[in-house]
Amino acid sequence: MDWREDRIGSAARGENPTLLATTPAGYAVIGDVQFLPGYSVLLSRVPDATALADLPRAERVQYLADVDLLATAVERACRAHDPAFRRMNIEILGNTDAFVHAHIWPRYEWEPEDIVRKPVWMYDASHWRDPAHELDARHDALRASITAELNALLASEA
Image 1 (cartoon, rainbow, N blue to C red):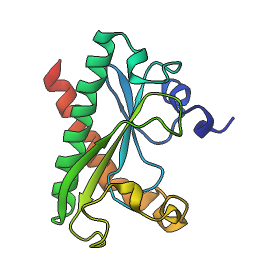
Image 2 (image 1 turned 30 degrees about the vertical axis):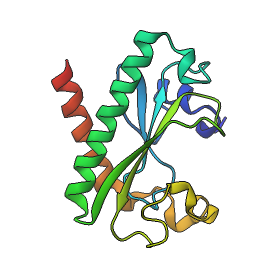
Image 3 (image 1 turned 60 degrees about the vertical axis):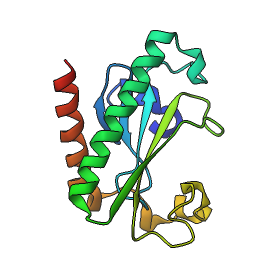
Image 4 (image 1 turned 180 degrees about the vertical axis):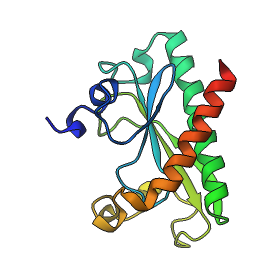
């Protein structure tokens, strides 16, 4: 089975190559596509939860706290990596994938004028399929920075 068919299970088993770190309530992964460098996702540890409301309140609050930690780590790493870093967008949608996950989107000043102030989903669908945007070795340094920032934040929470 391809790890993409079971992102949460593959992360739990250590088989998901996009895994950045494990948080108390989830698995932080870097996105398969990187047209906005640093794009990451927090997967819930509860694979059968299809909506945030499916998690008991304590787990839901922990998950949202972990989303905050991942977003902070991505922001710090992206700000250091690219002076055109602009801001962070955080989205919990669930319209396509029926498992709890939060999208962490860094936004940049170099984005097209007609998109930079709009939701990332306004980008043409080809951005998600274009091999030029696939996660690869070009992203290793940024990925390592995000991981280091997240691990430092997690250590300070302990």
